[in-house]
Image (cartoon, rainbow, N blue to C red; front, side, top):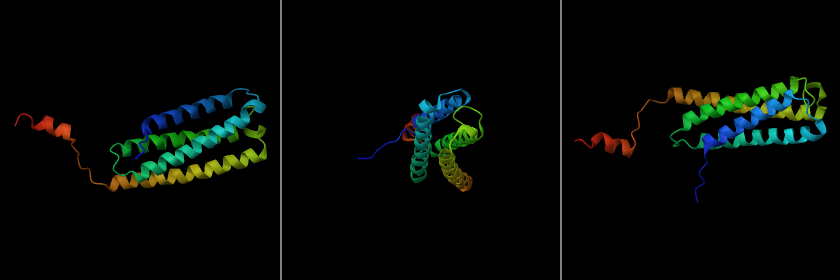
Length: 148
């Protein structure tokens, strides 16, 4: 059975989760309540970005591939900004308030983000080299030829 992934909705949801975590970093959240779940959320986002990028990269026949790679790359840059704000922030669960093991995990997430960003850059190069062939769907072709 072929599994179909709704890239657009998944990317949108990731973007919303990133914004939610960024908002959390500006608040005076109780570390005992929110630090562990925030780390779990960031880990989930990291794994999901990798999963979506892998599937989009492998699915060369997906019609909206270029558009969704672009949307995913924007979400990746939001994620990278979130990680930087988390390390350098001044909130109760960011910056100097973070224990060293959390700093190490964030550094791993940042490294993985850089790897994905390189993949996005390579994908853009691939699209730039690709000839601009117009594709007409069967419905469009029928509509265009109905008067003949």
